[in-house]
Image (cartoon, rainbow, N blue to C red; front, side, top):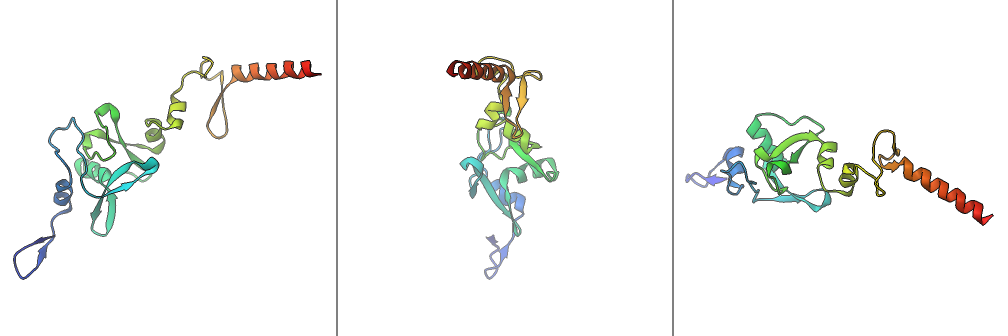
Length: 163
């Protein structure tokens, strides 16, 4: 809050004004606009901007998106920092770098082991992960049917030799 000059009274500034004061250079829509104030740690240790609006604390990149687009992000949806739009930081609040997506899409666009596995088009032996050659486990993981069949045949041969 800022003093008005009259006997220690304070004047509240609009949240949007306070918000943009906490963002580094934000004139070029092609570069990240980095949050310079309070942060919190998210999944995997990533840092995200944190901002107070009234009695609520909100994630800065979500608020930036909502203010710029004049929308409320639907319940159950998340904001993705889109690398293909030039975003390189979770502290980025540039609305041109942000997109509303499901959590699944956000995770698949990431760099986690789960995202890397999901992006694989072939097993470690070069067999394609396609509809007829892929078994999807109950936990969502995938197995190559050709490799499973070969492993089973090798196990039978080894068992027969031991007898």
